[in-house]
Length: 409
Image 1 (cartoon, rainbow, N blue to C red):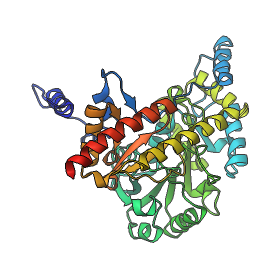
Image 2: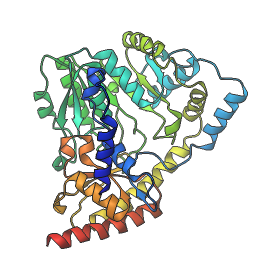
Image 3: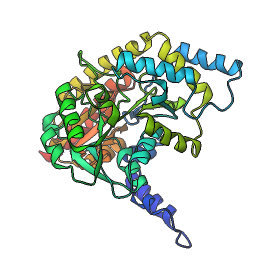
């Protein structure tokens, strides 16, 4: 029996209950993560090359780890204020002014347990049942789920491969109706690697102001950008700070995925509502993690640049290698550590090819359909892994794809 059949059988068995249980109806709308599906299938297999989970393979830089050890020795083991340590929020406000051109006070900054929690707080604060939120397609898997949690309606806005997954702003405007409450943007983008231009962001800002909409801006990959491109925070544009929730994190820039640390920036009236969510959910971000985050923000930034240089080299090797494989094509991502690979000439669907590469080639990828319907015909490869693994992964993929093409011919 194929791995995918075993996986689906296991899921069905787990769903069989002696009696029907009633769960929250919003949960019934949530689909299992397409990213985790391939990750789960790969568990227990040996000799795998994984391009799956988007996690830096670097260890957190030494000065950040040392700050955490010092915080433990100094006894920072108690609750923090709900919104975060005051000195940390001040440091984040300073960073936002200098780096992102967003002039904020510490009172407009909320420290969270990772970027995903920041997204949840943003949606839950803004959205009422029936409100519509425009989300990118393809886009990160939790956007749709979290809108559904609130009782809102996610509306998928297509980002197309022929435009390198940049937004067609005039088309975006056509998706707005009276029930539309917010637009979510993600630049640099997971999974596509697109970095929105200033012109595109200005156009989206004009729409938000004209239609009186909020923008939720996911900027987790702000530091991972190539070829001299510049990251622009939409909240820095005229008239946007008061209608934008900007979300940032430490996981990608500082290789701190397991530390669970993020932050958001929002108008003070929204921050007051978000404080209620914190008080009744996670209470506060981890105290030791916050001290580590302070060291990350105020300490040397050489580590960020060193990791970026490594990602850049890996990107070049991966993209060149993939483009030399008959049946595949891949434009060089403008940011992030993901390649979104066009597989349409293989004649297989995204899921079929991902399963094939796992079972036959021992290579883990993510089908583009995990990120939305526009992801059909693509697979995502994370190059947050070693050059050695990237080169070996390319060799395996080449052999596997050549077998498919040979059969089709």
